[in-house]
Length: 211
Image (spheres, rainbow, N blue to C red):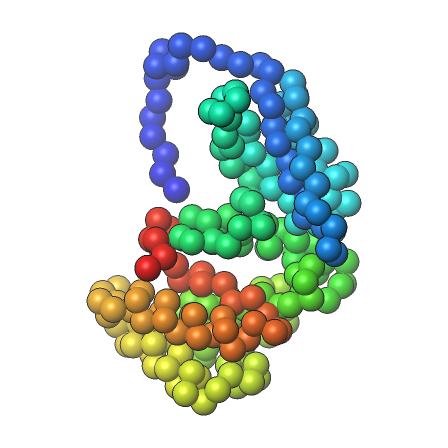
């Protein structure tokens, strides 16, 4: 995130009748619900999302519709198109916001902490703990790789990657290849855990593209 001072004189028009497009992602095989909400404020849209999502029992996202005809496009305001596979750090961040909102609501209701497809969310990042795997909103939080049934080779490589970052210390430079190595390990984790969990690469720096 960055914040920049602005000058109100650098704009030439205003619009009090925006068109918002909201997406509600069902918990089963139904198609995603896509609804345009027009001539209201963003505050009204977010209030409506509580109803449309049944108090966050469904994943949802909101975009501002810009342009007309072939020039029409979307400016994402909350979340992202959940049906798309993220390809960079920004898209993973938006997916994370949607998932965390959904899982936090399930936690408040005392429901199992799983996504609509029944899988857990396992986060991967080095956080100065005994493991670089985490599961938000749970009592344990830090996840032992061995508890997930990960192969010995992958567990060893995962912990070695995390150890190299921790050895650098909080103020030292991390190994130059830590991001690329992390991506390679994440892909292996993603494949091994695919039946039971979505592995989210929370170490992914915003703006980095998928190689």
